[in-house]
Image (cartoon, rainbow, N blue to C red):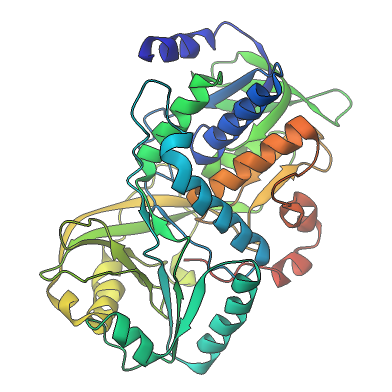
Length: 421
């Protein structure tokens, strides 16, 4: 089987025209490749798919460096639906992504621990209540809890200042993002997608200016394409600009700290403080956690592609005091490791920019997920496969995320996702 995968990778250098060329092979790109080839196989349809990925190791991939969690607690119905789809896909991923003759895919899934959002004033509580109505209307299993209700479930937590909390009781959890990426790519390859190590430097626009003819690679070679998917993550805006397409997506840095606690916290969920500080277990066998927070807006600049310096001061100034207040046992926690990753941040409404471009009809966008790439990747891959193969949405209707909304940023901002961590 390994030899077959290597042959697919080598073969990708021989062919120079594909029905679909996917720029970027991380969560969005590999999900698109998987669903495209799965659907083409089901329909017995010939469909050649090439994925061009500059870093097959995924060492600096945004998904691999993320908190690797998923949820349904969003403020917009479409994002809630995407979260529900993701939860179902992750639940079945061990067998869905299994290669025949090999063990089930091990993505180290921790299901149904849930996110616990905390409100410490009336305005925050009202927002949780509004979100709760949206979430439950979509079928999410979310419960509002009083301070007493939180204390009863989590006696190790300080609840003195809690006004209201929102707990995801199902369809939320976390996984090993690196293992998931590997499993997704391996299954896409098994189904017939080809992967090439390289970087797409330019989108090639046809003479009529209304479509793409293919892509140019960094080595100057050209790959022709029936359609092109921009799934380049934090590099998506730069690539789009080569075809005179503007995407309001910038690269933002997020630091994550792995810490050890002297005491275990039974049934600990993903805790989201009112100040944005988050923490979740990183091991079910020892008191190890990961935590982080978004920097203040005035200290959150766009960063260079090679800037992975950890913002160490955030831990001492913001994260540790917040965690020690919420969980007294965290007063004695100890940092074991830290790292930084990047968000492809949509500055208009913090939402995905998705689907066919309004001018370049065979350019498909999957950009600007603002830190939600892992959890949104199954839905994005499925929806892309439906648009490319069937010409319409069949499972999830993601019309709200098409790039046409960006023509009126003020209107888009009114529908912005507020639950961005």
